[in-house]
Image 1 (cartoon, helix red, strand yellow):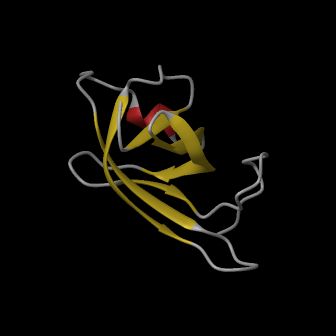
Image 2: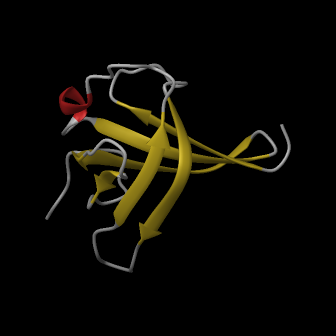
Length: 99
């Protein structure tokens, strides 16, 4: 696959559950980041409330090669509007979060 591909995995749901429509990532030095995603899924009746406080990741691939992965925690969700993920430090341990 050529070009940029953005993928999102949340909790223990299969990696192909969500497709990224768009996202906004705001980050500054020595501050928490904020990631907001709009995702869609062909899977009906997803247990979205069960995904709150779960680990999530946004992965950016270019020509099949991972360029970057942002790990966070699901902080909120809404149907038909963006699922908000974030306000977490970009560390391997996604439990280090603030508000």
